[in-house]
Image (cartoon, rainbow over all chains, first blue to last red; front, side):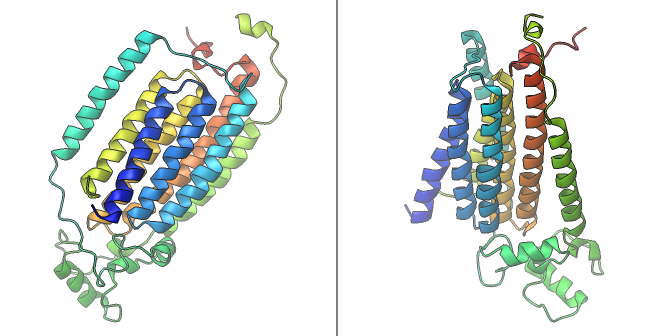
Length: 222
Length: 102
């Protein structure tokens, strides 16, 4: 067993075990702890899949940001650190059965698909997602360029580049005769949209969560 | 198990199913949020695996970055809603949110 396979097995087991422990555990603080384990191991899986920037972003944003936000939510809403809002035994049994059936359906449908041949990692496709060092290609694609689609002959004009790409099999299903500009554009507009969206969402969230009057305890009996 | 496309898809499927079950069974509002995070992570694992093992290029990684950002935004809004719910009901139990029931 090679080192990559060994590390993949370790982190895949940690990811799946953490996710199952999130479902099984009863107190919300333990759920948050197992979620940290699962999300951190997912970041390690991203590193193993040569997605270094996505793995770093996963660690920074999920484990460092979203989980801290969730733990703050737990602190602000729980009456005690080990508050339990449990489910009944019948619900647990039904949920386990439905979960196993659902997992079986998903796995059987996934394994029934004939995926395309895996990309061979070589110096030719060094800027695609199959090889690591994705920081510069990702940044360029967020700025509107696509360096991963025109890596081997960067100095030729668009037509020759397009034909070389189709000949090499990167985009084998393109049958148009002239270079398709839309296929080469990056993600500048979605990047701007998602940044404005994040700003609006955070302003709206802080507006929603502002301090207001608290409800009377009479409300609990209703 | 060798680290290939099907192995990554298996991990993504387990994450997705765990998230769905967590969303369906937890009565704590924060627990439901954690289920949503698990589902989005399963989708991210699939995106990155397809970006690594097929000829997708960088598109999968770009999409997983968008998913991460949208998950952060969703967690912020949902926590604001949960805090409001707690302020109004003094509990976080989602079964108590029955005021709109006819």
